[in-house]
Image 1 (cartoon, rainbow, N blue to C red):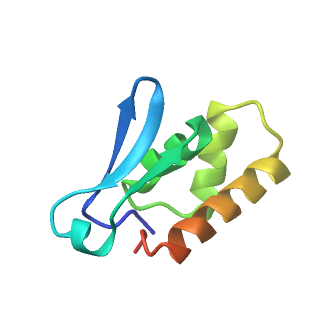
Image 2 (image 1 turned 90 degrees about the horizontal axis):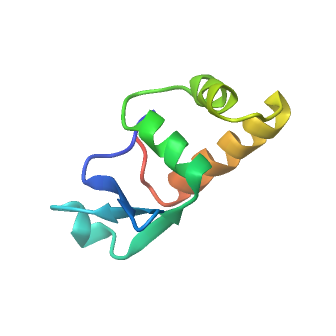
Amino acid sequence: MKIKKGFILKEIAGNFVVVAVGPAVRDFNGAISLNGVGATLWKALEKENTEDSLIWALLNEYQVEYEKAKTDVENFVNKLKEANLVE
């Protein structure tokens, strides 16, 4: 899975924000605020990745237990799917 075209991650004053650009603006208006973990996962999803590879991205970046990383990834991916932001 990966992030659909038309969405970009920006860092503004130390905050991570996702916005729609181009034709995606018609279907998605507003912005999504992400914390550091969300930004790490978003960046990984800018290229095609599996949920397992996202878990390992968190394990490599943060000092977190496997089960916590797995739960965080599942929650994040589910929210992206609900918002129709991944393909």
